[in-house]
Image (tube, rainbow, N blue to C red; front, side):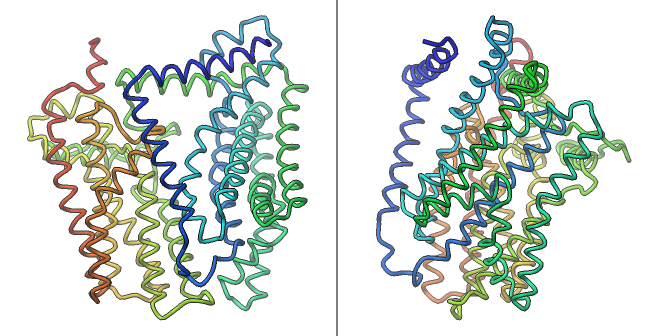
Length: 536
């Protein structure tokens, strides 16, 4: 057997054996698989005739395109800075110095990335029930899984190629930026033309854009999204064309390195070493509280505050040093625009009923709460527990935990205000519902932080990591069930929407306080990863 193929298969075999021999890991993976099976089984249940038929699948094309756009931007950004990597440091230390052709090692790296992406992309199957609204079954979700996997692998290889061709060459970096902008000009021009052609009807123009050739033939993003929808719709020839373009581009990118630059080893060292150092520092408890690598503009010094409140002042200073926009920036504006656009589409859709304003607004609230799963995670306050300073402040632990997380709660409140005012004005709902939704958005952030603290208190680690994110989501869903049920029953009983959503906010406040109280012992004993800094 080829040595690299043997290494790939043996690594996979050893990973399975490690899971089987580790009871904790095995239990978590079993729970994960049971949850995946349950979600898939629910997708087979009938809709009971709700909703008046599936939504236009053109919207699915746009959703896939926008989601892949995030990975595309990250790949280009990394390619212009440190590059993406196909290898781990053990590959660098062993394979790069072995008597193996670098071209064969490159193909091994591509196969390794495909294996890792295939495992990381399993979360798509959790969207099976959501995709039912487009009339997509389990086979369609499998097609989506394949298209997403193919697109993400190609974008990662693209990042490596960009870095390889532009490293140390400012003019080439400028050219890549210009080409990236030009790539989307046909799409922008088509969007403007569709808006004018539909007389300013935003939902109709967006749907036409999603079905336009300009989106379908946008490299990588358009090919993947249009190919998935084509296969789902039974258009096999079109699906083969779009996926074929993806495969050809991926092969061409590999060929650029395989043929044109066989001495690519130096091009992957920076990203490999950076990723390795971050993992090692996290394992040793040496966690940086600020991951910003760009130049910091120092406008003011000092943190102010007294006792535990100094943590809050420190976080504010770090935030404004890292970004000129402070707590709220481009991502906040993007969320607000997305929520307003969603409300506009739902309210003005052809089958919108009299309750469409409230339904669209509450649906936007649900989507934004869902996104908080991935945006709160490990904030500055939580990272404080991984270094020793917070343990040394002579204040009660509950007070220190609240002050160290006040910044992220204020950020969530301000972000929620912008998001739900924009969505509320577009949907035409009352001010009371808008304000209550802002409160729910901020309090949900409070709940997520409490869950992270509690997991660290009893498990010694942050549960919001890797495959555990699914169990993390399951735990949050179970915790929120009482609040959601209270809101639903209140709405069915005829209560005002603001009252129903307010009951959810009350439950969030109660659950958050209980979580913080239960996890306050995290600061009583220094048994966290920070202790490993001192040579335990």
